[in-house]
Length: 280
Image (cartoon, rainbow, N blue to C red; front, side, top):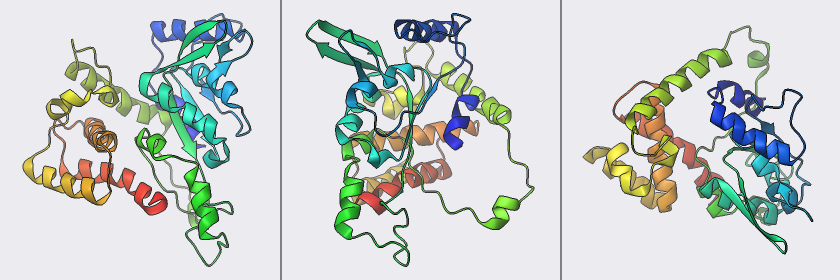
């Protein structure tokens, strides 16, 4: 449910984005009656999909799911149930925002600038780490989690654990924020980023190159000491470290804060703590 709501809080597509996406759907013969893709796509392929179905291909190569999700959301439910060869395909497009196919007829490059959203259980039965309910062996849990490689995890900005919904929460009449209200905050954050990166060729915080991290994700001396401890204790890669800083920068933007504060950094670190809990 959460994944399906994400396109509703993303900014409306620009005309250029609509044209890019429409070209992809035109190649696949999937254009709507209006002839133009006006809404951000939400693609949710089943875990039995082949690597070719995800990446694209065929005797006459066509775009796959990573391209059909261009400028939208690619949702992979039950992530470890996907073939590992299929999951590893995601690494290149998540980095380069495009996918390259090499076939005997020639080389093909398709756009693949999507937001990956994935969900998974921590084991086959779904109850780990509650050992009063989980009967999975350590080896089976390790094999199950092992389908998600460290390089793929490093490319995921936010990783959170959801707790069981209580009956009281289920029956609560409390009103939550609507997607329209959340989208307003997102748009405000994007305006701040637009001004920050004006004339640089950078579009979002997530696209900040490593050489500009100190300029755009500046933290004070005390915060640097804190991040050094996190870097060493969690055995972060350079990519993982930078993702924490970029996430903290985005959290600060959503609060309309010009600086990265301690609470922004602490929250961003929490979004990586699950890596250590389950994979290490």
